[in-house]
Length: 103
Image 1 (cartoon, rainbow, N blue to C red):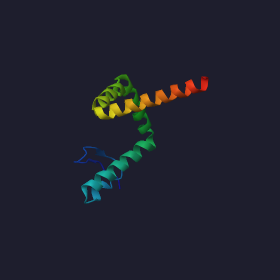
Image 2 (image 1 turned 90 degrees about the vertical axis):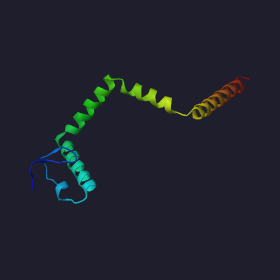
Image 3 (image 1 turned 45 degrees about the vertical axis):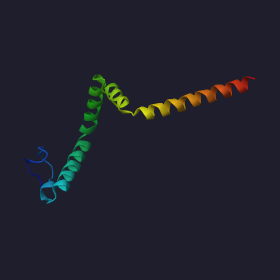
Image 4 (image 1 turned 120 degrees about the horizontal axis):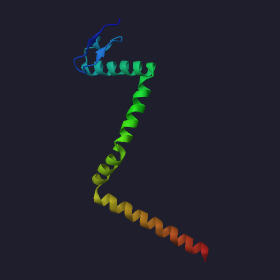
C-alpha cells in the first residue's frame, strides 16, 4: 500500500511502500525507511548519479586536502616520532644492504 506523507523524524516525503509507519520502534522505523529509500535510489540509478556529483563537488572544494591536513594535526606526537624512527631504520637498512651488495 503506497501513500504520501512526510515522516516526522526524517522530514522525508514517503511515496514508497511505507514499512516505517507500521513499526512501533522508532529506530527500526527509521532504518526501514532508509533501506526503502536506498533501494528506490539504486533502482532508479539516482544513487550512482548522486555519488558522482558528490565526488565532483568534493574534488572541486579540495576537501581531501583539508581532511588530510586536519587528520595530520590530530596524530599524537609520539606516533609521529615512532613512525619517523621506523622510516629512518628502514632507510639505514636499505643503504646498508646496498653497500654490502656493491662490495
